[in-house]
Length: 305
Ligand code: HEC
Ligand code: HEC
Ligand code: HEC
Ligand code: HEC
Ligand code: HEC
Ligand code: HEC
Ligand code: HEC
Ligand code: HEC
Ligand code: HEC
Ligand code: HEC
Image (cartoon, rainbow, N blue to C red; front, side, top):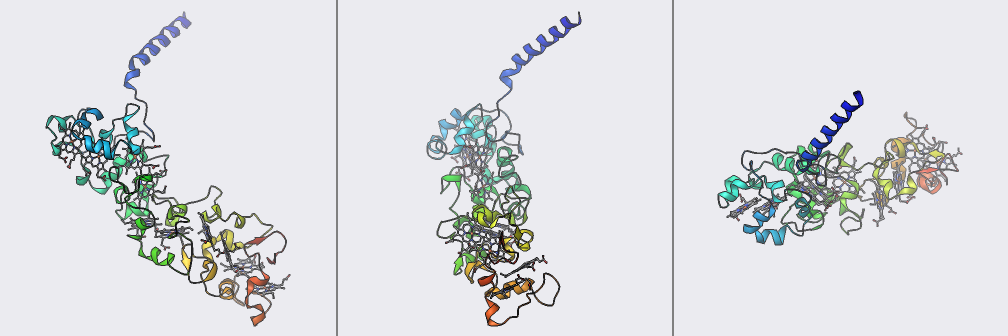
């Protein structure tokens, strides 16, 4: 008796699910299109990209078809309307511009929210709302343009580092110093070290899964572990001795002379790590001549090799 009832319920459930199937839309990559802020206009019926195309064919052909957002038309996505909102009223009005979401009239936050409805959680952009950029009113469209990108890759309004230098003059000056990471020369990019969309770390610096500084992504030999670690490499990180961008000192050191750098911490008789028992005579000034394995060593507890 009981099993028959269960079977009947199961059957009902399955047929209901089949009935509802056409209404359950597969989500479009990336993420799900959750309703972002829907301003009043643009609410209503979706008409589909083919209708938009009838009047906006030029834009469709030149500034949409070949962009990554063409994907929004696939898999039952709403295409144009996934960003501009449902367009029935706009179409009925013969192209009434007050009846469609135009990004010109959105605040930065509203525009960001529309983008984040797809590029939010699980993506590079998930910490955006709390980022230094968002907090300072820098929005997606300051760096990206879905239709008029100057750099097709990542839809950027201009290429790095030019894009960044427009607002970050100090960084520009740093990379022009005599000893610098070759960012201007195109060897590495700002985004190798920073996630401009925000991070949980300071200064929007990317973090390694190991918890080490981003630097070891490329300078793996400095990562260790070593039998004898030089403590600050692990505790204070690479930036305690190096400037990440550029410097007037070789090896991008923060201080022009190596001995002055070391003595910032190894000053005798102040507290902190013990100062060297040898004196500061000329013979001892080039510290790394003897303490060569300054990032850590497997052989010497004073980093000779
Ligand atoms: C019947 C023709 C027609 C159709 C169909 C149509 N539009 Fe328009 N659209 C216009 C006209 C006309 C304008 C105003 C002139 C212009 O900016 O090109 C316009 C302007 C726009 C604007 C700019 C608004 C502004 O403030 O500058 C957007 C965005 C837009 N349309 C999106 C869409 C989308 C999305 C669809 C499909 C849902 C669509 N249009 C379908 C005719 C149409
Ligand atoms: C990924 C989101 C997105 C999609 C998808 C999208 N647009 Fe846009 N659209 C924008 C943004 C953002 C702007 C503001 C200008 C810019 O930054 O490129 C814009 C601007 C416009 C404009 C105003 C003209 C201009 O360049 O300022 C029109 C018209 C328009 N879109 C039509 C369409 C049509 C038609 C489609 C589909 C074929 C479409 N959009 C798909 C985001 C989108
Ligand atoms: C300060 C400039 C800046 C801002 C603001 C910005 N981006 Fe980006 N974005 C970039 C740069 C540069 C890249 C390419 C390098 C990289 O991947 O980090 C990029 C890459 C991307 C990518 C492709 C890489 C990936 O895997 O995700 C997407 C998607 C993206 N941005 C979306 C957004 C969205 C959505 C917003 C707003 C919420 C936004 N961006 C805000 C500069 C910016
Ligand atoms: C309806 C969902 C949706 C919305 C809304 C949306 N996007 Fe996208 N976006 C996508 C999809 C899908 C791709 C293609 C991803 C892929 O190819 O893997 C994409 C790709 C991108 C890329 C290029 C990624 C790359 O790797 O080169 C950028 C940049 C981007 N979007 C920025 C934006 C910005 C800025 C907005 C807001 C104006 C926005 N997107 C709104 C779905 C969306
Ligand atoms: C439209 C202007 C603008 C653009 C373009 C821009 N930024 Fe920013 N950025 C800012 C502002 C404003 C802040 C917050 C104030 C500050 O720290 O300078 C900021 C903050 C930052 C921070 C965090 C600094 C801190 O003290 O926490 C980093 C890192 C950064 N930007 C990197 C970049 C990179 C890399 C690019 C290029 C891909 C870029 N920015 C493009 C305006 C911009
Ligand atoms: C080699 C890795 C690396 C590269 C490449 C890089 N940064 Fe940085 N950046 C860092 C680190 C690490 C910090 C944090 C420094 C600190 O906390 O002392 C930082 C700090 C910053 C800050 C905060 C203010 C400051 O100067 O300390 C800004 C803004 C910034 N970077 C922008 C940029 C821009 C713009 C580019 C590309 C032109 C860029 N960075 C390239 C690693 C890098
Ligand atoms: C994306 C890869 C990459 C990342 C990340 C990176 N570097 Fe570099 N670094 C390089 C390359 C490549 C050079 C080679 C020198 C050049 O630019 O000509 C270099 C050179 C250096 C030098 C000078 C070497 C010499 O012989 O003069 C120092 C010091 C340095 N990096 C420190 C750092 C620090 C500290 C960080 C983290 C803030 C870092 N690097 C992150 C790629 C990287
Ligand atoms: C206690 C200070 C200190 C710390 C912390 C430190 N370095 Fe260095 N680093 C130096 C000194 C001093 C030199 C120059 C050695 C010389 O001139 O022989 C140097 C040289 C370098 C060089 C160029 C020469 C070589 O050995 O390849 C690179 C690359 C480098 N460091 C990367 C890093 C990275 C990455 C980190 C973080 C994991 C880091 N450093 C942390 C002091 C430090
Ligand atoms: C940011 C601070 C800092 C800087 C800069 C620094 N050190 Fe150290 N160093 C330490 C600390 C902390 C220890 C561990 C001391 C302890 O365990 O008592 C240490 C340990 C050492 C040791 C191992 C011997 C001992 O006392 O344990 C030597 C050798 C050494 N450092 C040499 C140098 C040299 C050479 C330089 C310059 C290239 C330098 N250090 C720069 C903080 C620093
Ligand atoms: C000519 C080689 C040489 C030079 C140059 C040199 N050291 Fe040393 N250092 C030594 C020797 C040898 C020891 C003792 C090693 C031992 O105890 O096994 C030592 C030990 C140390 C220690 C461990 C604590 C102690 O006093 O025993 C520190 C810290 C240190 N040196 C820092 C420095 C600093 C900072 C400089 C640059 C101002 C420097 N050294 C320059 C050879 C040198």
